[in-house]
Length: 320
Ligand SMILES: Cc1cc2nc3c(=O)[nH]c(=O)nc-3n(C[C@H](O)[C@H](O)[C@H](O)COP(=O)(O)O)c2cc1C
Image (cartoon, rainbow, N blue to C red; front, side, top):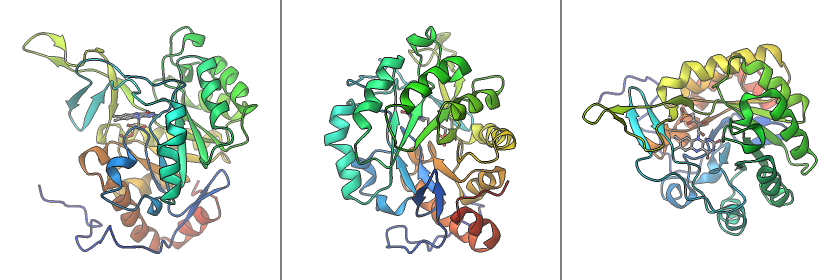
């Protein structure tokens, strides 16, 4: 397929050491550039062969839970127009293994680490955050999209009261910068964003995946065994952008990380113009492992031409 994107530079050597020209700051944490990886789409063991992870703004790890989770059985992903539906089920080796395995490797490699936290109840989130309180991670990112028994089985990120209770509790357990990662599967994301910030979130990231499904017309049955899953990829890009814009409109000062459908420097730039301090690249890395570092380099060229925006981001400010 011909790449029509003018900023994709065929001569760009993604493996070479690079002196970044445009940094950003998220909740007081310096990022070398405004581009990180999105949780669940980055694995150090695989990515280390493709690029130097210390070159990224930050890496957000797979969600870690109190004990190892095997994830969902059967078929977990289905292709969709301009996206993928997944119901991996937060498979991960658990926080104890993460602390002695992936985290030390990422820090030894020089990465700025955002540890993504998962739980099926408030107690589970609290257990993980307590174990991470004194670790080497630079930031925590609380994934509040998981079904939560303390919130009656729904995702805690869809209920401002349940979310406030959870974030108030987690805030007491750690001084680390705490990002709350919002779900777009709500009527008014600004209510949820406010609840998170008023209960102690230092920053917000958005969006997690949108509820979706596919059906096999030969059987009449859902393709994914879990029936529904989360839609990611280019299809969700305008949704994520609108969420960032709306939240920035009501919360002018909170640091925001924009996520959803980013696969080019241009799309990252749209998020920065919507009011984000930084972005995370997700599903694009499943197609091309180098996507996050390529997006960072493309964005750098675009920021060269926008010194006002670059200067604002470097001071921890945002376009709007
Ligand atoms: C396979 C897969 C696994 C994911 N796992 C997590 C996770 O563990 N924690 C989390 O907060 N988000 C997870 N996500 C959501 C992504 O981090 C991101 O928010 C979402 O995919 C939208 O971005 P994208 O369109 O760039 O992929 C996952 C997404 C995918 C595709």
